[in-house]
Length: 232
Image (cartoon, rainbow, N blue to C red):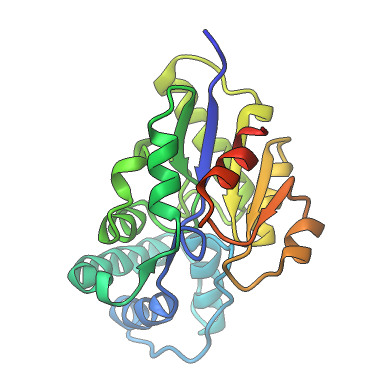
């Protein structure tokens, strides 16, 4: 069996732009789970929901127990479900995202999923809101409930893809795309390929310095994106 390329996408500021939702949803979820009003906001870009939640609780003088983190995550999912009908008006798919995902989905030599700091339920809501969910296999993704460390999410996605497809994905056949240095280092930590997409807060130079094999200004040129991913 020929080796397939496993393509793992970040979501926020790589495929979609829904800036501000994280702050709003955590504000609602924190109060619902603990009765505490949001006073301090952690940094969001490139971090996992587990890491953000742990820091958020600590900043508000709450013990970040597994139980309290789970309660906070339940409230995050609840607010995402309530606001799902509004997502399409509060953000957008980034230019070229749908076209690239569709082009990769047509290839028999590519398996496509996500590595995202989002919880799986929130990832599904976000991608579905912009019609991107049908192009990726969300059952084999790495999600933000797994670990504080984004590197662990890549390992989980590779493990799930291997189990589902019945063959190994060597690390040099795994490509992770994202808009932050965290996305790139999560890939290169394991020997996988990191590709930067400079549609977030970080510059081309910062993504290159993190170790990206290539950095794209955006996803608007489908052929250029495919060439970067497939190494041709």
